Image 1: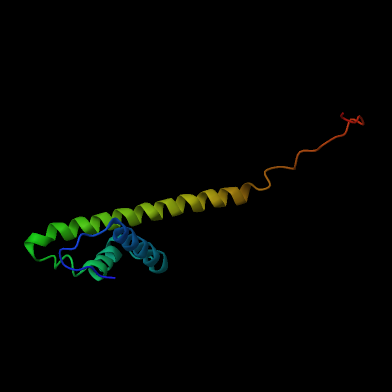
Image 2 (image 1 turned 180 degrees about the vertical axis):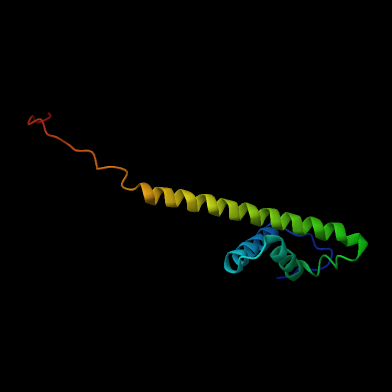
Length: 108
């Protein structure tokens, strides 16, 4: 979905663009910044014109930074969760389950 020129860019659209960057990075393994440049051009080309236009260059650069930072944060969180999952799998079962020994008396 592209946006019209001068329409404000909603935070949800930036978040969606970051998710696309993450998906492409996981599939292709390319640098996040390269993918971000492509995704921003695809998703926001109608609301931010070419980088060679002086008045929009800073807007385009800020938008690319914002999307790239969000994507890198998502990738870092994903890596942390993967490490936690691996550690949990490696430690299970951590030891034998605790034994229950009956004293022969019934509790009342």
